[in-house]
Length: 110
Image 1 (cartoon, rainbow, N blue to C red):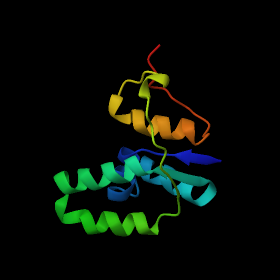
Image 2 (cartoon, helix red, strand yellow):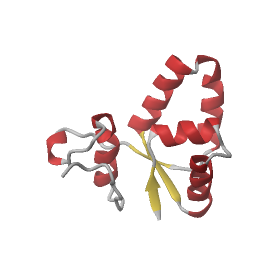
Image 3 (tube, helix red, strand yellow):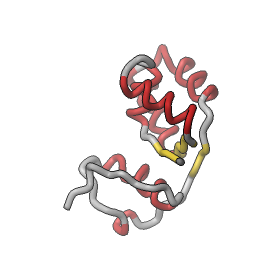
Image 4 (tube, one colour):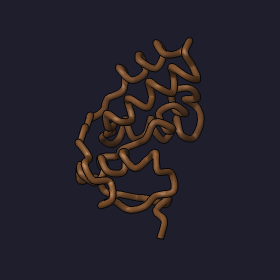
C-alpha cells in the first residue's frame, strides 16, 4: 500500500524513533511504499531551520536514508478539495488525492 505522511509524522519519527509515530513510519517504510510530496519536504526544511537549526544536517541525513516516492503535483484550485481542520495540511491532502492514494482523513470537516 502507498502511504503519504506529513511533516509532523516525519519530524516526530526522526527526532523520536522509538515513539509510536517512529514505529509507524518504520513499519510503513519496511512494509509499504512511503510517499512524500515536495510541499512536505519544503515544510520540513523550514521547521528545522526555525526550530532545530543545529539539527538540519540530521534531517537531511534522515531524509536521504528514507526510501520514498516523491510526488509534486501543482495544485491550482484548492477549493475543489474537502475542508480540513488544519488548512496548512491542504497541500498534502491535495497531493495525496491527485496521486490517487487511498485516503483516511479523520480531520475532514462535515
